[in-house]
Length: 106
Image 1 (spheres, rainbow, N blue to C red):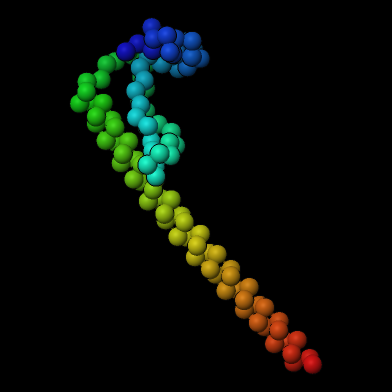
Image 2 (image 1 turned 30 degrees about the horizontal axis):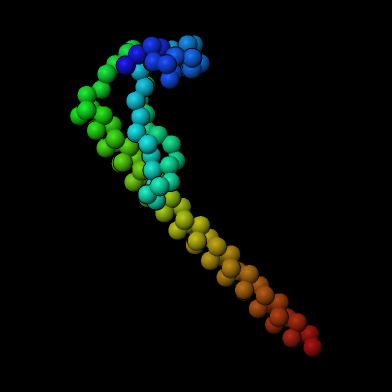
């Protein structure tokens, strides 16, 4: 495929100017079944063609990237949950100590 000769890309600034892309192939990155978050893509300044096997390999790599994104998101969510729990505990502790001091003054 030559992006400069493809009507879908021929006027794209990345094709007509630096970096002068001539080849682009991508597989969508999807999480939670229908939530599209972008694309896993490859580009080159030389026109190229992908075989079906090569395109399938590109999409396999995209699926691996999706799994890594999901694991990273779950790890972040767990860390955030622990932080929220710690803050909640500290707030309860401060409230309890404050109530104790108030009761001592009575």
